[in-house]
Length: 515
Image 1 (cartoon, rainbow, N blue to C red):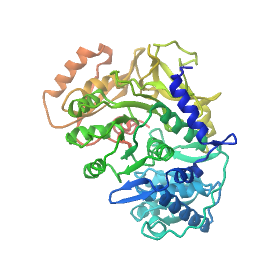
Image 2 (spheres, helix red, strand yellow):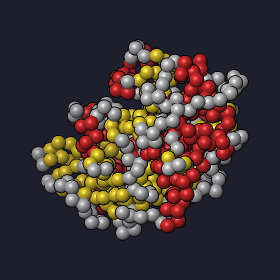
Image 3 (tube, rainbow, N blue to C red):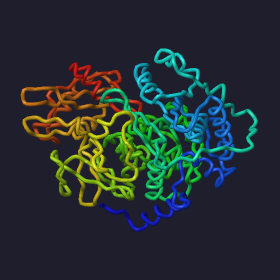
Image 4 (cartoon, one colour):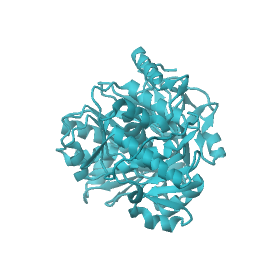
């Protein structure tokens, strides 16, 4: 095991002790009550012109729990929460948890087909949503009760709560169903327990000590990164969360004026910040990026424009999600994602399962208390990635001389040409170094010799010199066998996931008809 510093270990142990009573870890259903008892009248959430204290947030969640009970929701039932970032999202989220039900926050960009699949897969008894999503819901599946947020969550309504009944659950029981983006098919439900979630939150807090804590939440709250960093950690630490309803320049600027200390984002969001150029970020102490590979171009541009460093993190929904983060002052390649968090074990294995030494590229396997319970209703899919407590991340990586994880790409994206391994991320970084390239994706095209790399480029404007210039850069920085054999330029957005990643499966299907 690559161990953490003694100081980080000590912090982690103290944090775990703070949420453990009689050898039992607290559950997510009790988290808001725990926070309200400690932080009471402190502001918990700020969303545009509204704000709510910890006490008020807890009372609202308790009132919502009672409405759920009136609807017949009981412990173990599944309730979907389908709404954009808002104070109401938090009320619904904790209201569901407090009755002992399983909460499944849904991607706001779901298609009717994906939504129909999730409703059936989760065996959902109820969906908490807003009017704006009703039309899509009707098209997807009519046979489900719907609880409109406008009808049950009214922040102006007086609080009449006298007591709150919170259901006790096993900390290791299924508590969250987090559906993946479905880039490899229909979304899979990742089963997360309270222990998974709270231990992972403690792993994050132990890595970084906060002097102040005012978090800007632009990330969509249905995403595991946002739930860890904008729900679980803030409540444990007594932070105030500035909730931005959606990724919109005006709303982001509005949120930044509320003086956050911590900014969390995916690479696409940091790219937008670079385009904005004059965002008021002087009070932000920490910028953390996750959710996708951080291109050199975005990190360099952010550093030049704002004179600030983006810290690079790594994780997956299946690991609750945090595995590692690099907070060191030294500049590392963007593929470097830091050392593993407390109690996270890592191994680099070859295709036969043999453990490789440091410096060798192979499949990244991890083990720890934050690893999921499995995939919902998918024992075969679970067995493919979980073996003896070890989880196959699907990423290719190596461990460098400083015991940091360096990601070289997704295993499924690896291009093999005449026996040589080609890592698309390396080529994409070269292509993105050109000012005219907005996005780049390198995919493998079937060929007699296996596959050949093809570059798809989203460009700012027509430039007849662009491809010759890119070929020159590739020749200077890449081995000949890594040179893209075709350059396809587009002006409109390629297919994207909810967090701004290029959906390579969909892109290949469009280009080559791949299933």
